[in-house]
Image (cartoon, rainbow, N blue to C red):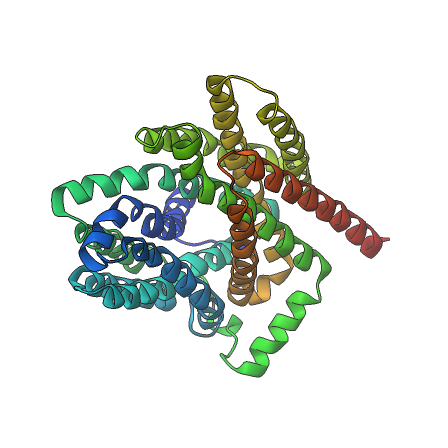
Length: 406
């Protein structure tokens, strides 16, 4: 595997650094879950459920930041945008640490989301600067392993921090985590975008880049399929805790089941990194969607077959593994497929891909979540429908690319 350019950093170190920047978003969301009851009681005792807004405003900020950090890195370089985003994230976490009202906390979390987009999105552009094609997909898969594992341990880590320092301590953990990334980038990561390759941060230039992306059929389809992959993952994440609690009465053991499932499913990224060089990115995604179609269809039938509660729980856990496993086999490949023809505008492309896919995935997961009826059946049906749509779109990608090469 040959990189596009040589940098004075070992490939393994670069993968771990990029994975850590990816993980900052998952850590910023999932480690908050155990703190929500205490936050609600302290800052909104009249309506503790409002504490859940600390998650949604972070995602909103992340979406806003996603659209601008990539183009900024195309104009000013990768390192400066990562470092500025990390510094702003630490500042926002400090504000949240000192917050004594819910409104102040929400403003701080919005700022955290915007600033987290710097390390998260620009890390993808760094990979595209250094690697290309299947090599990028392989490296992305290895980085995605951390993305899949961090949500598994983040709730437990959050619980430990809360036990030692109360809910305010979560934000100290955020400051320490991002501070370590900031130092690492400052000391070890070289600039990967040459000055001659930079694009001015001007509206006409950005608009031209956006038009180039949306007019490329492979890029369009890969973004849509990635939105479906994220929609499937977010749908499972949205309903998995209610299913464990309300369907199986296992709320107390949920963090441990969730962690075990995520760790097992995290191996999907390693499987993809091993196979993608031989099988190809498109085929890996297509096979994954086809497999999830079959699995979700079978699970839906089993959920209505009158099996015992223990058997149904076993089926659900196995299916949960398959859904997380599918995410590991698709999202890195779809990013690489979309980024491959956009190397000359990698920062802009990373922003648009991440922004559009996230914006589309959020309502998909919301719709699936609203169908919850106290059983896992609506979730199975929703993921089955999304899998069919993804499979059909991948077949369309094959046809479009065949016509282009004919």
